[in-house]
Image (cartoon, rainbow, N blue to C red; front, side, top):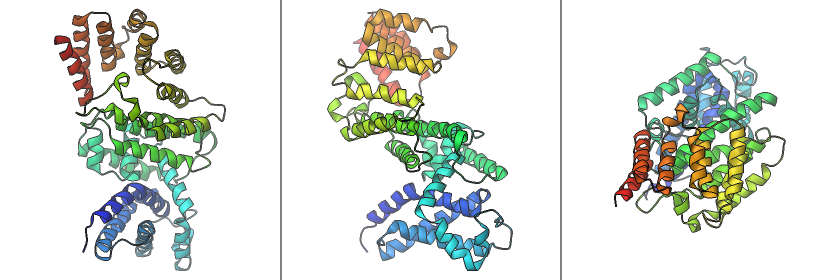
Amino acid sequence: MGTTQPIDDTLNHLFRAESGKMVAVLIKIFGIQNIGLAEDVVQEALLAAMESWKFKGLPDNPRAWLYRVAKNKAIDQLRKRRHDQVFDFTEPGRILLSSEYTLQVTMDDFFDDQKIQNDFLAMMFACCHPEIHIDHQITFILKSLCGFSTREVARAFLTEEATISKRIYRTKTFFKEERMRLAIPEGHELENRSASVLQAIYQIFNEGYKATHSDQLVRKDLIAQALQLGQALLQHPLTRLPEVYALMALMCYHAARSESRVGQEGQLVLLKDQDRSQWNQELIHSGHAFLNKAAFGERVSRYHIEAALAYEHCAASSYDNTNWQAILGYYDLLLDQGFDAVVYVNRCMALLEASGVKVAKDALQKVDDIKVLQKYYLYHAAWGELYLKSQEPTRARRAWKRALDLTQSPAERKLLENKMQQLEE
């Protein structure tokens, strides 16, 4: 028997890429109240693949093999529990599953590739139901749709596995009590629910890009999952919306710079110090393409503006040649949509580059009485930078110390410690 590495790699890939889709289609078959059974069937199919492939080798089409086994195991469950009222066969779409004469052909129809994709999207919208807390939404998406283990999700958000298990349990309880039918919403409901879905995807991406809860500076697995979820939305005509293209553009621009954010010793490298030759041009071109496609329709979302802002950074030949006036304009547009502490502080730092330290300090001073900013590490880190520029090292050190006390990110703490150390030299 040869090495099992190709089999392990294939299984890991299939688990990440397909387990969520299989769970979604099985929920459509069993009903969302039987979500645990759907997950068990997927696990059994993956275990069967592991046992079979290690002795017989990889099949010609591993994905098709896995889906066929999952379908057969689902049929076994339907036959075994046909009379114990576990499944509601009166539900539209599941009536034909109650008869042996129509069971197989109906199952084949459920496992049609396009319908599987639709069920996956419908499950994503179910996960982002407005009555489910955003942390629970993201936890459930990563666990059930992206194939992350409970330990991986806990590690990503620096929390206990027990906390993740509770979130999963409560979300499943919500699904069971609501007994909702999986469907992609339409009309105004699609617009409202899409905002939650995009927020969840962007939050997954941000955790991968900034890794605020991990000792890893960049979590490529989370970035990849966020991009994959965005692509899934673009594959369906109902969810192929301008703001989805805009979010994809934004994520591509940020992802293009992710490698250069990490130094050789694993430290955080600020934008002005990054080697732009390391930026991923393929992702930047993808960002351009998505941004062009985001231009249709009448809505200009927050993602449109943030993508345009990220475009300016990617288009600049150097930090000094950045179009800071354009960037200030985009920050103003974002603030017109409502005050956001992160946006305001970032605007002040852009103001530093465009108009100098005095103007930037005056702008930041204007929000000094906002309590939420006093607990925001970036606000104090920004003051540290401004004090440094204005030759006030004592104040700079004090501001960075305050910032240090407020951030949990190991990378940000290390960056601040280095800045304070440089003041001593």
